[in-house]
Length: 585
Image: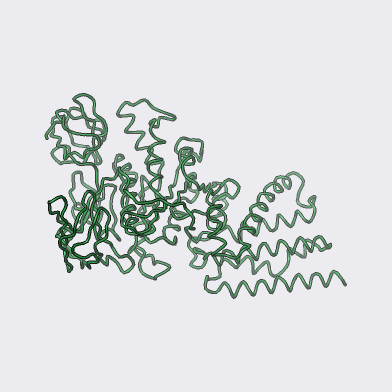
């Protein structure tokens, strides 16, 4: 159905004569057929959010509704690709338009000409329904791309074949209520509707990130959600990059939503050259990047978040563990605020729309551990960066996020300025998954690991209190037992919590290495307090040679750390034994 443009306000177009259009229908706007979405209907006026630059549009140009909601195409060819917020491959756009995206450029998300080798696993005559796996394609050496029955189709599998096919060629036929449906490898899903599943589980398995302050102190479970608020320059993006590289998930969906172009270009340059730490293969073989930078059309930011989570649900349905990085949800919320203002809606706190909290919840609630409709178990772990203005987390996006997520990694500008990275403040951060993960830690680490973690956190809390006192009276006024706490606190901060994301040995720590590092530091703490109780000199404790070994242990490669742990522990025991012997003499 054709209508026409009545009014234009930035990315908002008011159209008339589109009486048959529905909320969230995709429309084509103007002679260039810009992509837009119906976001409000008032009598005979239809408000369209345009996802492209509206420069050059003028009243009277045609508007045509497609009758379909905003959807993504799902098929082999997703992995290793770089899309914009509307799932248009940036590589193909560059071939067409050069360095800048031209308005109205029409590029297919999936290569419709490439042939994929399909291996059938279902047999003719079996009953199938939505989500049933009928075969697979070896999309990359790391990921089998399972082909599933699309939504709305169930019945008897009348035929199935295998061989090399394009994504649009028929590979099977299903009889449903006397009608034959042809199945191909391509399906489409609306991005604003959460995918179905059979069963949802609690989060009771750790997502190992290799970041010590996260895995040991403030863990996130597979299928969990986390917010990572922090001011400009506090290291949000680098932390997300590190998690994306090293987390023990099968598939990574990285959404750059409204971030600066130079930061996103670093991601696009860096990721294709990264190796998967487990297989040695290129990391892009299990990664999808979605780039919607701050100089791209503002309205497309909102779509990019939903595109990312829908792709994640698709891989979850195949039985994979998916990690979604959203950087940053603040820019997403700002796009909503701008569109809400253009719609003349009643503003909420700080001008954000009243439905901000619901939109945030809708996004984060699509994570979890599930039995998918395919019968396979999969999970989506969502980590959203938040960029509060001036680092003030009392603003609505930060507060809305913290009310929904169960892990809060509080990035601290003071730590970042002192070159302490990751700048996760151990006094303000928290994880609500600790109790649920206790059985997992008991099974996969030594029995005393969680006890040492709690002791270390208490010690850091006490160190912060003592540092306030030291600023008033100086360290010499403290008893030696409390001066030991200051020393051990410094070791925890500088030798355990600090981590160099660019050092090959320190960027990723296995959980085993983390447990041994913490064990060494807490063993030193215990032995030092015992020595002080016997009357030892605090200065001798501070000048022990083992302190050098402890300060350098984070740079020891994971595979060599068990040997280093044994060496440091022997040195620790020897030096404290010698100290005790000298005291007796």
